[in-house]
Every structure is written in C-alpha cells, then in structure tokens.
Image 1 (tube, rainbow, N blue to C red):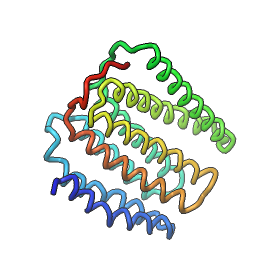
Image 2: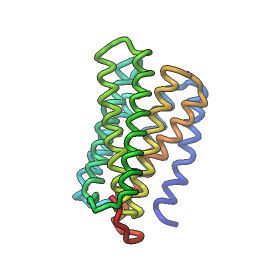
Image 3: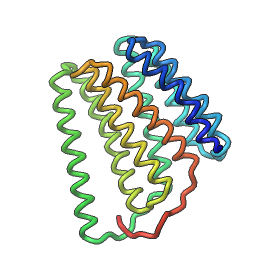
Image 4: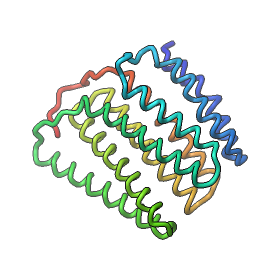
Length: 231
C-alpha cells in the first residue's frame, strides 16, 4: 500500500475525534486533533518532498502555527489562525506559480475565463458585504478584505494553472483551493450567521481534505495528462 493511502487511513481516527470535539464544543480537543493531523501526513509524504522545497517547509510551519492559535480563546486565537492560514496560502500559490505558464487561448476559453473571474469577484464582494453588516470594527473589516483577496488570488492562479497544465499536480491544487475556500466560508457562516455544529463539522472535513490535497500537491511531480493549449 502506498504511503499516501496509509496516511489517509491514519487520518480517519483523527477526523472522527475532530468531529466529536466539534459536536461536543470541545475547542481544545478540536485544535489538538487538527495539529495531530500533521504527524501521519509528514510521515507519509515527507520522504517524497525534495529537501530544496522551501515552500513546502514554510507551508507546514505556518499551517502548524495557525493550528496552535486554535488553543487561544476570543479574537487573538481567531485572528492568529487567520493570519498564519493566509500566509500558508501564499506559499501554496508561490509553489503553483513555478509550474504555471501562459499560452495562447481561443476566444471561447477567454470568455469562459473572464466569466469565472467575474463570478468569483461577485461572490467575494457579496460575502464581504454580508460580513460588513456583522463587523463594526473597520480594522477588522480591512483584515477580512485582504484575507479574502489573498484567497481570490489563489483561486485565479489555480484556475490558470489547471487550464494550462491539466496535470495531476494542477488537479490537486485546484481541489485544495476549492476545499480551503469553502472551509473559510463555512467558518464565517458558523461564526457570524449560523452557529451550528453541522456547519463546523463540514468546515473541519473540508479543511482536512484541503490539507491532505496540499501534501499531495507538493509531493506530485508535474506531468501533463494530455497536451492542451488553453490560457
């Protein structure tokens, strides 16, 4: 059995613990299980990552720091998690940019790409408008704007990378981007709109899936599945 499959099996008990912690409102247990996720992932994938992959190391360090802030209560813990999560996203799309090349596209693909960008911007602005009604502090609102702009940049890079490459590596990257994007939306939903355990469980599952896909992304070599010429 491949190391990635063994790692996935090791993640399942931790995921069950995290779901239990969320359902029982045990914040410390949820944060602890989230941090413990890194051990089977590092054991399963670290040998496959080249020692020169600085982006991988930086991603792991910042993601772990984000998890550590989960033990803190109130705003310091919440904002600490978001700050280091945002920084970890930066190292993800810096790695993706290494393999992203721009090619000539036909007009139909360009139209589809522009429509997707407009839709992403529209939904982002709508989400920020909703947050503005819930957040009175201007500094906090500016922080959220920059955080989601960072996510938007990663989403656009994922789209361009996938359309140009169509490789397993690009599939992992666009999958982890979507998982993290929806996980952050569900987190805000639980925080500002619907503080329900089911929403937090979905957020935890998506975040774990995104973390697993991030390790797959870093450890998969760039090899195109077929030749295309899109964006």
